[in-house]
Image (cartoon, rainbow, N blue to C red; front, side):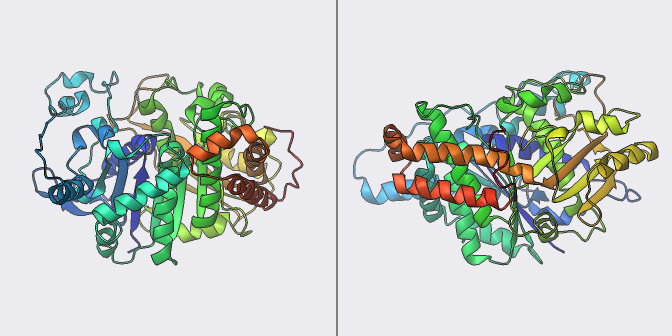
Length: 496
């Protein structure tokens, strides 16, 4: 068995992750003659429910600010360590204050039949936290609540790294919870990681650095959720945007160094170029984390499904080697169609496909290095149209591979974002791609960082991030080196 350990860091990553795990729960079968399509043991281990009963729990570490955990919030190891420190250093009077418990979520109340169950699938419940719609139990070690007082959400790159070091020291994270997850694996293959770059970029970099120090041969697959700042349309005088763009750029450089294959994902505020395609099948609120995370999760879950399919021999290392066969394209693209209408034609795939890493349309793609497609619920006539669309590219097997799987399940926890009657499953397609066009957004970051390094008035931004001007110059140089690896010869510098 080749178990995967999952890492989620940040609010949006956990919204996406909650949908992901709800989908895994929907694959469980409860009849002896029903064979599940996935190997649950790769992603789940035996743990304990809140009632201390044995149950299957995700092989997961989930990081977020304590206030974002909702009803999952608990006294963390970091809190315990802080209390012990106070016992030995503070001689004065201690006053303990307790907060009222967070009420049960509307969705969970519906599940338990406390509200009219008939409304469960017709309207969205009130979602306050990502835990509000979770359908799985998390083992205690999975919940890694970062004390709110320790983190300024936009603090900066070096602060995030320092935060990880302090948290690791206080809780013995790597030698405790993470080590236990690894020891519970028969044959640990690597990490599938999702993280928010604005709030957990530096933290995730420090985590991956620590992981790599000990697990050199383990593979990592990463989905990185970028900030809403656009390097092509932001001014150097905008303090917060400058900070966010430099932070995103540092994350991209980090992933290129530390992860086997990574897929940067555009912030939903930058999906405007995709809206005409998305709106053909979806009616979603782009300001709702619950809605937008559902879209992204369906693509991530589908694209990575071959890792979990029963009988599949694929693993993270195979995916990385396939997509990065050139050894210089570790940053890829995530795209797809959600949902796919019935009676799809070649034009349907061409016109509805959305690239969530670049927002470029199909006509902007000059070439593709490698592509891995996964379709869900397609019939024979749909597959013929899909194959015709794939043939437009000059790619041939094995650089262009496709797996066809059953329809994507839509649990009751999934948002009601469909234009037509809410389905119990949907047809869709998702792709992981490496292509020269990845260099286009990368050049936007490289140019912005280069310009920042030349502007003396940006020193305040750099200082707030714990960076010096030389650090930014080195970052710009590293980004241009990554760009050159995509073989575009900077020919598209005017695009984006």
